[in-house]
Image (cartoon, rainbow, N blue to C red; front, side):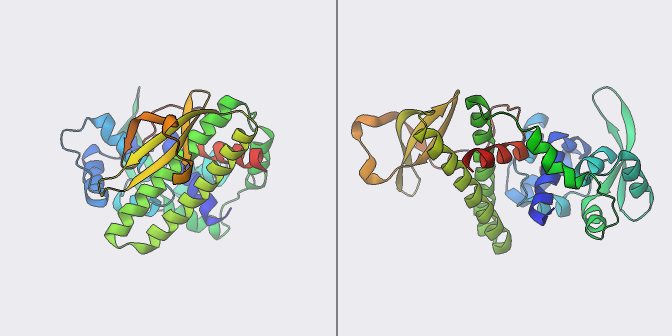
Length: 287
């Protein structure tokens, strides 16, 4: 795996398995306030955790690792991400080569002590070849074989996941630029542009095939007075925008609703497709 692919898998596993439950709520609030200037006072616990999850991307992974000592993996996660058996993952944790935080955690129906493994140590072992990652070669092949069909519903869900992930990188880029962290800003911009390019190629093909419904044009207004226009399309109940040049704006097609500032990166709809599945599905569709 490349470094970028590994980061994607780490983030996807942590989010899918809801490992935010391993981190104390107060620590999450402090982290969100310090790193992203998010005001969490009066915010409900579930909203705090949802906010923490929504800001985690491959671009911000290092922030989470450095800012949250309990940000790590359990045995199951190590096996899932690095392609080893749970028996092997358990031996790695007990070997002393990986720093761990022992914590008493309450899950939905039981409490237990868990070993939270430090992710950078796991990555170092992986890169040093000390993990038997026998499943890695088959990982992508299995995913392609089991890849879901390119139905309108599945493509719509995949587009939604990719679009929101691109917007998360956009938000990270803007935040890190203001903080003077130009390295993370550049990485976020690169990831954002790649995901938007995949989204645009997918939408162009869908439109050419007559599979998307054209709704109209949204006006987008910013606080500094800048005005932008976006074409709005729908597919299986999901809506998506593409840039609209000023000469393409037809007053008869303007929609009543106006978009104020940036479109949110928050995922407000549940999907059955993971980021990795979404990316693979769209890449195969446009190939």
